[in-house]
Length: 167
Image (cartoon, rainbow, N blue to C red; front, top):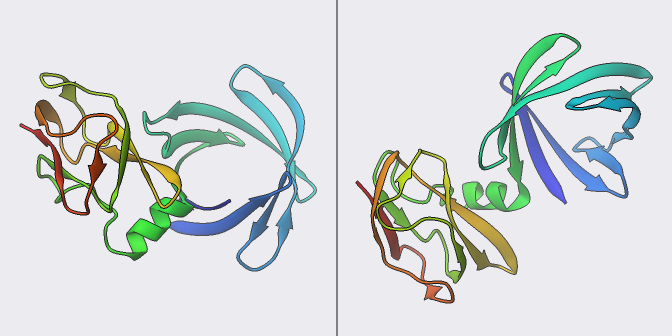
C-alpha cells in the first residue's frame, strides 16, 4: 500500500510492505518498537530512538497531531486512492466551501453515516462508497446541517451525481 505523509510542508511518498516502509528513493525503513505505554511509543528508526506521543487524530484519520522527541507536529496522511483522486482532479466531494456533496466517480453506496437534520463539521465523513474495487469516504465540504440525502445504501451513483446537500 502506498501513501503520502506531509509534515511541515515536506512530503514523503512511501510504500508499506511486510512490516517495512520503502521510500520513493528506494530506501528501506524498518521501525522497531522499543517501548509502549498508553499513547506513547519509543520507536527505533535508522539507529536512533524517537519518543513519540499521539496527541489527537481527526475524525477522518487523515490528520494527526504528534509529539516527536518533545516537538509537536501536524501530520497529514493521504492514501493511494486520495492521491489518485487528486491527480485526476476530483479530490473534493463538492466545490470548495459549497454544501453540495457530489460523487467524485461512479460507485456503489455502502454506508451512510448521517441523516437529514444532522449537524456536520467540514471534513466529517458522511458516507462510504465503493469504486475501483476500493472503499472510499466522502467528507463534508462545509459545516452545517444535512438538508437532504439523495441516496440510499446499495444505490449505484455516477460521477458528478448530487448525493447530499448541507445548508
